[in-house]
Structures are given as structure tokens and as C-alpha cells.
Amino acid sequence: MSSIRKHFLMPFLVFLPFCFLLGGCGDTSPEATLDTGTGQHAAGWLPSGHKAQAQAHMEMCADCHGADFLGGIAIVACTQCHLGNQNSIHPTAWGINAYALHPDYVRLNGTTGCANVCCHGPNLDGVGGTGPSCTQCHLGGISSFHPIPWNTNILLHKDYVQANGDSSCRNAACHDANLQGVYLSGPACSLCPN
Image (tube, rainbow, N blue to C red; front, side):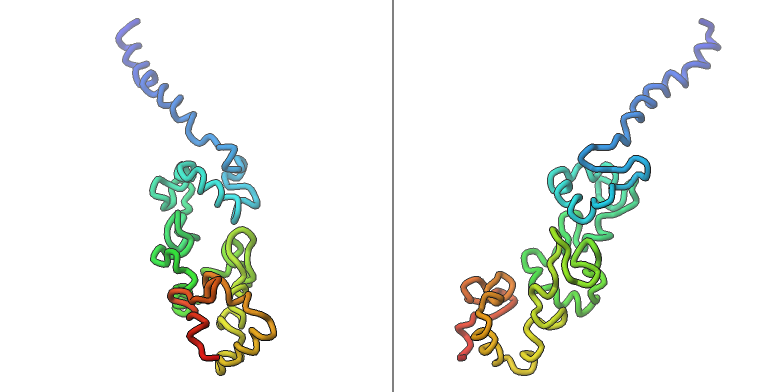
């Protein structure tokens, strides 16, 4: 073979292995339910489909959303929805105290970040498998923990408990299962003289 012909073929011979390597990139994972026609996840992937997959195979998300999860080739950063990072739906500083720290966030930022089909629902009435309805905890609507009349007279809670029982008070975000109080939230019921 002449040296001219070898010189002419050399770039193609070097480039050919890269073509084979690139051919492996972009294969869709059956777990990712990626629609190859649109390049997006199939309908219904959000909110619940991606949660289980991300928890089980976060490395698969990095293929498209980037090793740092800031967008990658998908140009969709996890923080477009997750207020903390790819592992934290709420701001990371909230930690396990989200129940107590979200009111200040809502007062400063409003409920826009919460009111969507992937979090607490467009009307804040909850989304199955992700965010509960705000009224599950806020008995007086999204701006009041207790029923509205209690905002001016907390002593009305005694009548409420006598009529309805204390089951809505007994949870990890309000007054604890044993009514012993919850850090940064509701006090122990034994502290009240009534």
C-alpha cells in the first residue's frame, strides 16, 4: 500500500473506534421509561415514577441530568423542582424539621413552589405518593394550623377535643403521638391548664 494511501486512511482508522464507542451512548434504560421518539420520560413518570427509580438507581439519572445533576444533556437540573438538591425535595437545611420550618418559607416565598402537580397539588390538596394535602395538617386552611376561630381564642381547642377527640393532634408534626409536644412545633398538652 502506498504511503499516500496509508496517510489518507489513517484519520478514518483512528476515528472508527470512536464511532463504535459513541454508538453505545444514549441507549435507553428500560427502567427509565424514556420515550425514544420525544427523548422525554413517558407520561406519568412524574411525580411518582422517578422517585422510586432515583432512589434505586441515582447513577442512571446522572447519565442525562449530569454527574452534578445540574442539567446535563437533558438541560433539566434536579433543583428546578427539588428545593434542596437531587436528594432533598425541601431545602436541605430543613432536614427532619420540615414540619416546623416550612411556614417561614411560605411566608417569604408564597406557595408557588409547593402548588404544582408533583408536590402538594395545584390547589395544595395533595398528590398521591409525594406531598400531602396542606389541610391534612392545617385544620384551618393553608394559612392556619388550627381551626380559624382558635386564632383569636386558643381555649376553644378544649371544646374541639371533647367533640372530635385528639387524634388530629397526635402526630409527629403537631403535639406527638403521646401528646408530649414536638420540637419547634406544638407544646405538650400537659402544659395547658385546661
